[in-house]
Image: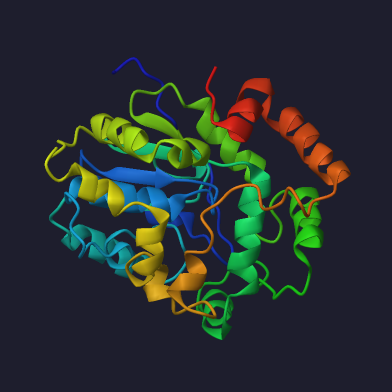
Length: 300
């Protein structure tokens, strides 16, 4: 392990969403679990999976309280750091940063979740279009804002997709940069790639693989209950325990945040030329192996 070239932090990312400086002061424990994604790729789903595995199907696990987005700019980093330091159980949290903007621990376990960018945008659009005044106030009107505010959108979803693709993640953050950084370190012993497609195809099997990777024991008598608690139907009916702040930042509440849980909604809406443009961009930005994994979940 000592001969491994571990990733090093080389930059800070600060915006209306990000404060990557929080990682500079985070005190890792050897069994920490970090769920990493670009966003809207199955982040909350994977947090639910990790929480249910670690707590053996406990229905009281509240992701919003227990598993924060550490590099989100709000609440202030001192609040989040204090909350994480006070936890005595095995901790699990999430990040949306590329690897070179966070402090990487050789002892922590990292799960990186991928999803086709077209599916990501359809979910991201729902996230953005349904954000309420409290969401905008938290991101735009609190101390420490860096860069421009995030604005409301009146675009239809296809126009939104085109702006996102042309602006590499606009109005959020870079999609390709995030993916490339995690793909590059996929062979490290404490990094595991997970794909939304595979979770949909074989939830129980993928969860077993995640539990094994985390070194978490499986209670076979209770395992069906653990898996059931990670289904979309269960999470939708218990959405307040999954959504940040119980879903209070979105119109319609937590049930809006836990939206459809499906892929392919873009197929009947996105013109073929736009889809081809996306695929060509993915190939150019990521190379054939990563682009194929992103689209299918199949590793070379």
